[in-house]
Image (cartoon, rainbow, N blue to C red; front, side, top):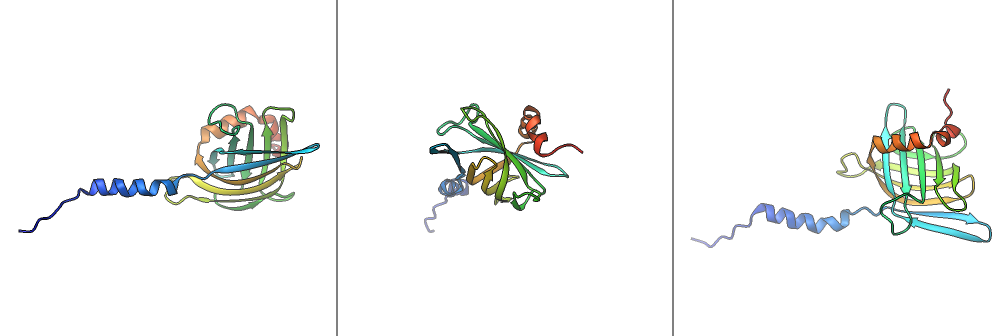
Length: 176
């Protein structure tokens, strides 16, 4: 009789999963370049992103917390409206992509419309509704926002932002 060592499959699967986890971590990071008189302000954040999709559009809420902060009121929020749930979208004068950037506090608090740029939006591998995106956009006040992020489906969070900021949203997407 030979000496056979039995290794439980569960332990092997856990060890294999733990090995893969670091490579699967989200590498979400946005850089916000805000030109101001006599200097350039740059904020880097790990965004919290939610999206909602219905028959007419996909809406994203991208919260940018202060650097190093994971909770609390965001420094700024990007709100985007896309015509579909997957694809590449341009933000130009006659394009279907629309959006605003809201700076919540500071000397330059307020909102500005997304003027130009690009967003590439696709499903994540085994993401269970999660999406992955790269973004490079500019606003009317020449703020530039670039980076990558992952988004989770969260209708409640998107509706909450829309209710709180109705006046901003109606300014670029008026009701018929």
